[in-house]
Length: 288
Image 1 (spheres, rainbow, N blue to C red):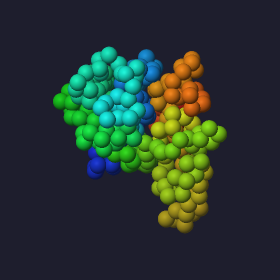
Image 2 (cartoon, rainbow, N blue to C red):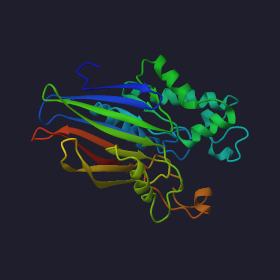
Image 3 (spheres, rainbow, N blue to C red):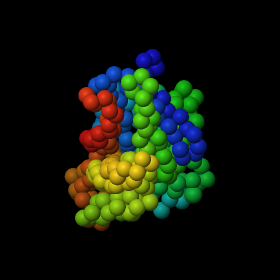
Image 4 (tube, one colour):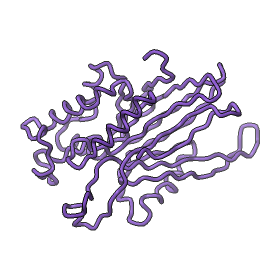
């Protein structure tokens, strides 16, 4: 795309780079983080998902996905399957193929914005039960459409390189992990931020999904620099909610029977910008 300020590349199966160019003070670049879209589930709020994708289009924002784009629970041999949870276009003998085909059709209008396509537990469950990688099949189709989408894994890294003021460079390391556990009715998974922060001192941003919660929690840390100076730095933990609304009006369903609460919907925006002082900073806000 002409005049695009960013480019994305894969360096290994779970290490990627995102290069951003901000030549002028006040320049900014948005990045959309999504997880748990569950696009094939009847409870997926596709209108909201498209609204966020359309906004990403207007901002020329790269879109990163941390897994469970597919729900994929209605195939043979899946004990969770239910006929009431199948969209009409997926009620076919080639169920898994239909998921990939219709997902590619949904994503085609945004093909040039797509970057990381990572695994979630729903994709790994299909790989285990049916010996096919839905994420890889989807990326193959997207690449035929000339998309820059790349496969990720269940966890990995994205190093964000920012070039500014001509030749100056700064980088931020984003660690992604699809997520694990039930989130917790009280903590909503926030306690995992403290656990992950113990072994992720090198990450500036720690991002996960899975529990369908939404929060942003900065943690201040201290390190000793190469110049023997004590430096404070901020590690930001992000949990993205997803787009599946299982609660709806609270009338019935597995989500209701187990006493689960309504969950937020959406993703998160990273805003990378060159401040008035000339330094590069990153802000995070919910995409709602």
